[in-house]
Length: 271
Image 1: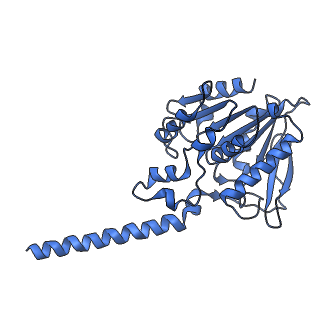
Image 2: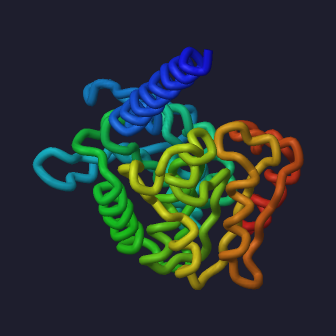
Image 3: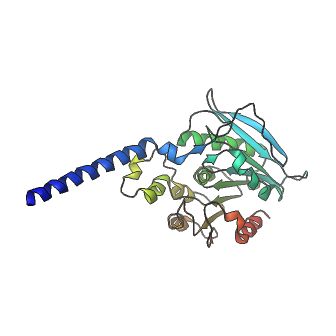
């Protein structure tokens, strides 16, 4: 009887070990698929938006070309520029609807697509995303002074925005639903794996935040089902006196703009 029990236990240990290993391999080799959900479109297809805009390309090298859309205020006044790093889904077309939140305050909005998103081409890596962000900043700095540049990140783009803010001068950094780091985010979904070693992308947002000398504002909802609030809340300890961590009660990952608290605070930051 004992021998039979041992065999059953041993069989289940083997099954669970195999499942653990197979799941781990899948998480490692398919993590780009889990992390990014791009939608590419033909470079010959013109963008169509119900607001003034201009499309341009940033040629990084022989293979990497970043498509950039600049949204403009309706009037002739330009108070500065918002460098907007969007989330991990689709392309600029999904996020263009947020540009009026800034253009109505007379800011241009420069929104690039990551490689493989929209019309952008090339190899996607953490280093490449950082380099592309820096190049975008250089373009903005050739037109505007640092006190007229706002760096904005949404979801996945918050890590890229925070890196850029850590290595450049700007008026302020605004983050909508950020994450502590990519390995820490993976740990929220698969805590039994060594995510710090498995994650190909690190993007340690918490480390970059500690290096920023100008104002930082973070928005996050308590009902975020993509980047858990408890994870993002840990970023608060890295903020300076005068920075703001704004909690939106009941806010999810996708609907913060529907809350009056969010809209009012964002407007006040742009005054």
